[in-house]
Structure formats: structure tokens, C-alpha cells
Length: 165
Image: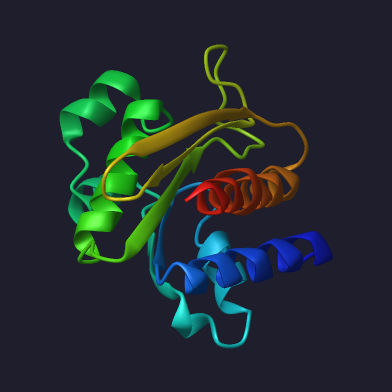
């Protein structure tokens, strides 16, 4: 875990504890990196509930209830799918007193297309009432894209949302 990621996790942890919320993650291109980074912090069981690694489209359907027709129509790396992943993770976790984040993207080095090049990542957040999502266009190696996604989810998505509530 980088020092920056560690600082972000501590901030997220404090905000979640203050708000009596548990974090749920639904990850595709990060493959559990967000959950692993969060649980490196001692005492994370106070604020981290669970993580879903749904790398395949079938896993997104089976574990999170993402409808196949949404994946077929928009592709796994899309606003619609990442929002369905966040909702599905929230529901699968029991929902109450939880916040879910989701990630789906193309970390590379292969798999990109002209419409969705390597570094295209959608991130989402669901709080039980409203859904938030954002498109990231990242560059770098596979590892750099995954780390940048982690930091964006922790920082600009979670810290930003939790600080406003």
C-alpha cells in the first residue's frame, strides 16, 4: 500500500466510523485491490463489511444481480453496469447502514478498443438512496491504472461523498 493510499484509507475509516456506516466493494478490473487495501488497516472490521470480486460478466450477474441485457447492451465497462454493480452489492450486503462502491474498467495492457481504450474505468457509489458514477480516463501500466483507480475511489469518491454527508 502506498503512503497516499494508506492516508486515504485512514480518512475513509474515520469518516465511516463517525457516520456509523459499513463499506461494501464490488470490483472488476481492480480484482479485490480496494478491499485488500482497506483491510490492511488494523481494526477495519469496524467499518469494512465485505467485498465482491466480479471479474467476469457471469460473476456480475450471479453475485450482484446485474442484468445480462444491460451488460449486452452497454458492455461491462459502462456507467449502467457500474451503477448496477453498486446497487447489487448494497442489496446483497443487506443494505442498512452501508455504502457500496463499484469499479469496472480496462486496466490493460490489452482489451482496449477505440471507443473504450485501455485506462477507461467507471466507478460508482450507492448509498441506498442515490447513485453516483464517474468515468476515469487513466494512463500508465496495468498496475498504475489499478492503483490510480483505487486512489480515486478512496479519495475523490468516498472521502468527497462522506465529507458532504
